Image 1 (cartoon, rainbow, N blue to C red):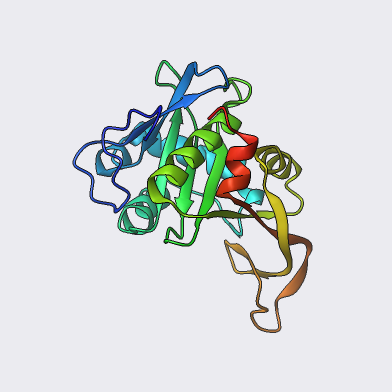
Image 2: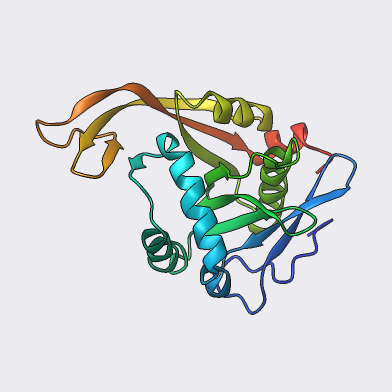
Length: 222
């Protein structure tokens, strides 16, 4: 894989060494690193605290909204993220290993993959870091997997995320109304109405996508 120095480019979920992908800008300068979450990282109490705080700050960007706790975050990492071979979560770090957020892949298969869990957690992150993180991750995976299509979903009220995805080259492929259901401590938005207590949300879910050819025509520098 040209221009990438991954310790293990295997995408099957079987890793013998930690997977790290350099984040580079248009000039090829390294500005950070994408570090794939593994069991050791997931056990880092400081990281768990960061992830919990970041999710609570960005709560309204998720389809399932609740007050995150360290215990719930750790359970999510160990029981949802790590065992799923079609999912990868990367921590975004700077050149000095400061943590600035995370970005992931989901629903990985031969025909497509999804960008997932894009979250800028640290406001002091270098300008453009999330953009270059996405470009670096997508470049690596397009090249290593040969999947022809990348997809994502975003809430229509999330203007900052939509602006980022348009800059990456994604276009709107579909749009769906959402239904809101509330329990004691959780609000859930879904495409299907769940009982008589569900009400239609004042925003939609936008499905976006970009082909491998369109991506590299835009980001040939990558």
